[in-house]
Length: 497
Image (tube, rainbow, N blue to C red):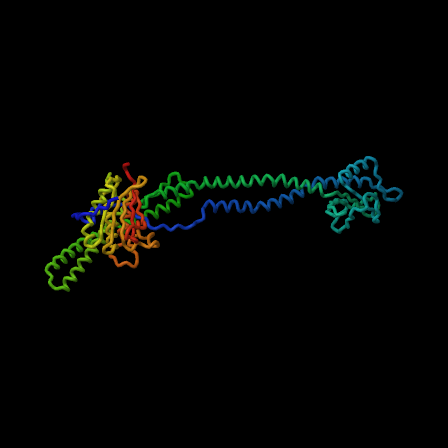
């Protein structure tokens, strides 16, 4: 693109009319911090105890299954003892176990199912049955004619025995021990089947339950997510109340508290803005009078020292006046009630005319100020006064920080339906660690001896926000003798193809 040297013009470098049209609020630096989600917290408290109690449920189910499996088999052993007891008789003053054919058939059926038995007389004699079965020792707590159960080991096999001490007058004196036993294998198999029937479905039910809980909670906190999206979609300067319609009753107190906070914040900002605006207005008149009186005095001053002092006063009042103007801009920028009228405008023409206004200042500083474009209109929707003020601030900064014999270039172009207005200088540049804060109000890079209020770039950011645009800091395009510097890019959406 050809480089055009600008021509002198009578337009003032600082456009004070922009004070009457700026509005909105600035947005400070964001510091993001990780916070645990509410959904994750609730899921932990719901699913954590659930999966913690599940092993306990398995253990309890195992104990219950063992008891359930023992009940029918213990009843069979108890019936075997009853059959044996019915066959005890005394013949010729001698205790015998006379088992008729029907009883033998019943015991044979029990034996076929793996049940063994024996009977022991009062003197310890074996009256019949399997003599290898364990013989329980009677304890004082065991009563006669009551069935008791124990788990024993026989030939390395776990068995369960049922026994009772029979005492009947017809059988003579002494207690007769009747024992029936069977392997615990079938009991264990039945208990395992019960456990499988109860536990196995839980492997499918628990994940489904966890999924349903997650889905239900996600639906439950959906209003919070909707509220978050509404808050994020707000403009930085929107401090109006949050609409409570459609919000769950549980979060309405939170929304009321946020609305109260927004009201207090709005009142504080309005008070601060009014104070700054009033103070700036009050300072403009005495500063203008002081500047005029200093100029008049300088014309008649003949003493060199007096002239030097008056020149310093003039320079100081000029800086103070610029600071007051910047404060007024910021005060109006924080006014949420302001309205900006946007127009179709040629950004190329606006940028060229604004750059021409700074030629005299550039010549006075010994800086080569140029303008580059492809001589083609670039149409955007915007407020001419505000966009000109944003460009004025960038050019002013570039001229202040560029040394004598340096270069400042204003260029205009477009890319992907975006207009790019850039201001590039050959100054010392801005360190990377400072670039995140350079748009903060009253922030200035340390180590520079350049006068300034620290508000210019903050105002540029304000203006671009009201135009749905952005301002970015880039490294300069290295070409020729330019090896350092700063490049500011203003990006605005193009309104016409």
